Image 1 (cartoon, rainbow, N blue to C red):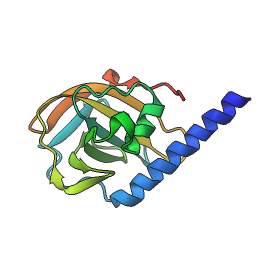
Image 2 (image 1 turned 135 degrees about the vertical axis):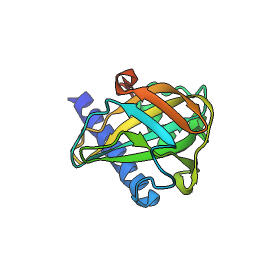
Image 3 (image 1 turned 60 degrees about the vertical axis):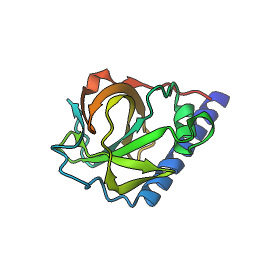
Length: 162
């Protein structure tokens, strides 16, 4: 029983954090450049009509092993302060799998600046929905001038942990 309460508390905490991110980010999607030439392409990304996906790119060497770590990243706290480099959002209404990436500044995306990083970076993919089933997945992606490609199957689900 106690574990169920803690798990629900985590779901509520994450939902509140995501809602805050949406409010502060302007909820306007990524439109800095043509997403066909700049950004992260995730091949075989499942369609989820009416839902959205978000991605975050982190500094090389950043290890995010649990969803608790993700909450620390979201708050830009502790060991994760300044770890987020870029952000992208994609509405999944039956088409598209490329996220235009913008620079991340403090706690919000900077919609005016396209991210152009080069190297191998940890990437988090998470779904944004209203049914309390949000999940978080991680992988590493090689980028060249802000452009990278990865298979959806390469992402690994993050476990719940306190």
